Length: 212
Ligand SMILES: Nc1ncnc2c1ncn2[C@@H]1O[C@H](COP(=O)(O)OP(=O)(O)OP(=O)(O)O)[C@@H](O)[C@H]1O
Ligand SMILES: Nc1ccn([C@H]2C[C@H](O)[C@@H](COP(=O)(O)O)O2)c(=O)n1
Ligand SMILES: [Mg+2]
Image (tube, rainbow, N blue to C red; front, side):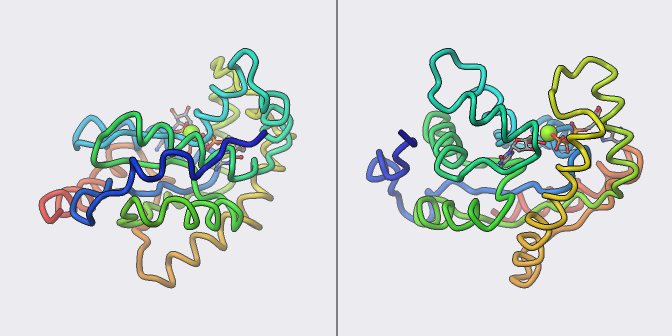
């Protein structure tokens, strides 16, 4: 059975001023989402929630009814149905009780976006999307290096990466464009070195924190 998303929603209802603030972090596989979120957490008061990490954790949880399905989806670079992913995110947000979250790798497709809006739009405040823009060539090299360094990820190989990039171009880019249309995207060129990227991150997050 899928995790019931509406469970506990009343507990989570709060006034606009108290709503947790969300920054979505999107970009191709290997564009640096996890690395840059770690840097943001070190410098600003945010909790980092990676949808991919939550799914991998669920996949490895003994007795999980979704484990086998998640494993198959991840290997094929396909996007897991939102009931599972959004359920995991919602649970983590509620459990943390923090006020600012970086939601990394979500929403990845229209199903993710629809599921999120249905269940979360009343209880959280999505502030903007941090889009880490990086070429496929650079991303592929980074993921293959990560695999060679022992990431243990079943999808850090050329076969899975090709599928993940297809999913990214066909399903995630339209979501980034949707938020662009709403004037909500902060784009950072993440082909560059980490110090260069962090300079841009500072220019985005310092004013955001001081205004919010
Ligand atoms: N700007 C950078 N320059 C060089 N290496 C980088 C840079 N950013 C990230 N890396 C390295 O590239 C690899 C992928 O980075 P990271 O895990 O942060 O990407 P990601 O976007 O979270 O990927 P995924 O979508 O696969 O989870 C890691 O080994 C990381 O150390
Ligand atoms: N919203 C999401 C996020 C991730 N997944 C699955 C499919 C991805 O290829 C995999 C790895 O994610 P990453 O760690 O690269 O962000 O996890 C998903 O189905 N839905
Ligand atoms: Mg990641």
